[in-house]
Amino acid sequence: MIVFSWIRRASASHPEAAGDHEELEVMKLLTATAYAQGLRVDDFHWAVEGELVTLRAFCDMHLDRPHARCECGRVFVGLGSYYGTTTAMVRHVPGITEEDYRAALRHSLDAQGWKAADADAEATRLIAEVERWPVGAIIERFVDRLAIRALSDADIGRVPDRH
Image 1 (cartoon, rainbow, N blue to C red):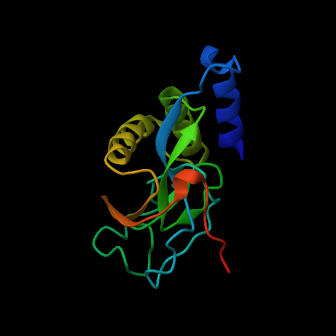
Image 2: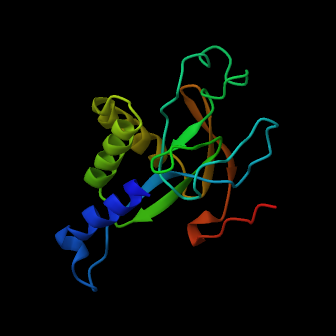
């Protein structure tokens, strides 16, 4: 994953990441998850478990009917895989600063062909949205509205196996 390796390199270059005894910054961010998939008949999860996600949709056909043929009104897109999922999880992500997050989002949007200038506004929105929810909350999307679908024990790192 280009974005994840870039984040690791960027995080390692920060002075606070240098010492073993110093704690890395931890951000609460939205990540792809398979948890709670199947509660809706049109759920899907093609993104990489745990990767950061964007709200960037591929088209505007979804604006009036998010459960119609086009899933763009419900999808979260992985920053590294560029694959979608209909569920995202609030997780603590260690070793990433807000600056790193914004840069990763800009890089991903640019790589996907979107205007990277929109990344800061999206990052600001997602950071504010995620602050309202507990770690482990499973989030679903309906066009521009994000809502909690379920809660998990994800803060300890467990995600159930998919069969």
